[in-house]
Image 1 (spheres, helix red, strand yellow):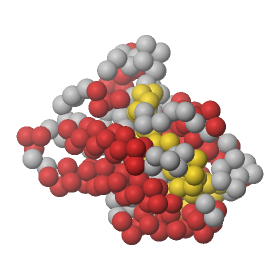
Image 2 (spheres, rainbow, N blue to C red):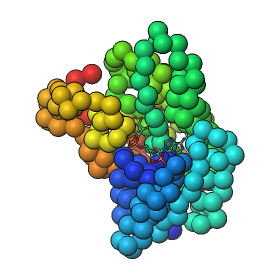
Image 3 (cartoon, rainbow, N blue to C red):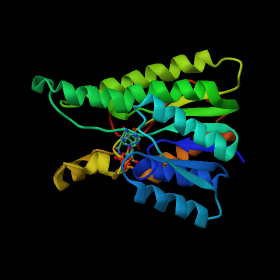
Image 4 (cartoon, rainbow, N blue to C red):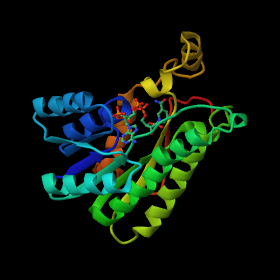
Length: 242
Ligand SMILES: NC(=O)c1ccc[n+]([C@@H]2O[C@H](COP(=O)([O-])OP(=O)(O)OC[C@H]3O[C@@H](n4cnc5c(N)ncnc54)[C@H](OP(=O)(O)O)[C@@H]3O)[C@@H](O)[C@H]2O)c1
């Protein structure tokens, strides 16, 4: 059975991606850092649908944890075929606050993690495998407060393009998806209902994205139909004007 690791798949977009890849026939690895109950519930749902799932607690910003995530995947499924690096955080703060602690945390969880996950993926993903990172459509904008987050996602996009070149000859594609606003805790936390309604109105399709909207695109990139898409950042945002 082919396997798929989805980082940060205990909830939000990652959980939807993981469930979709399980439906597509992959044995899946539910990764989380703080919510074992949610991770167990996602794995149980996959198993109830006839799929295979394991859960692995691993902080994606920590090298030893990331190595173990790949080791446990190989132990369970023999090969690593698809790696989706979805885990991320989005604390917002103006640069004048000089909050170096939060800046370092965002860079560690979003960008250092991408380097660590991509390094392990480069060593372990099987021929014809897929590596998919997560950026954000907000990279194209310069909203106040998004400095650390945009820096981390722009850096991730850079790593995606370089890794696609470094893996030449192995038939492995490396891409990123860059969602616009999606209805998860990461986007809605700390926002007023008015701000959320504003985000819906400013989208040509009149709503926020749902995790399943993003999961469908990841499924395409991870499956046979995505074979000729390589080194791309796919903006999945319903046409939100960026
Ligand atoms: N939602 C949006 O509007 C939006 C838009 C553009 C891009 N994105 C990107 O999409 C991805 C998923 O976002 P989301 O909205 O689904 O977020 P979310 O609902 O907040 O879920 C985040 C997931 O990441 C995990 N996680 C956080 N820190 C981790 C760490 N250090 N190690 C391992 N796992 C960790 C969480 O696990 P625990 O529960 O265990 O903490 C959780 O499963 C992120 O990369 C985000 O930047 C989201």
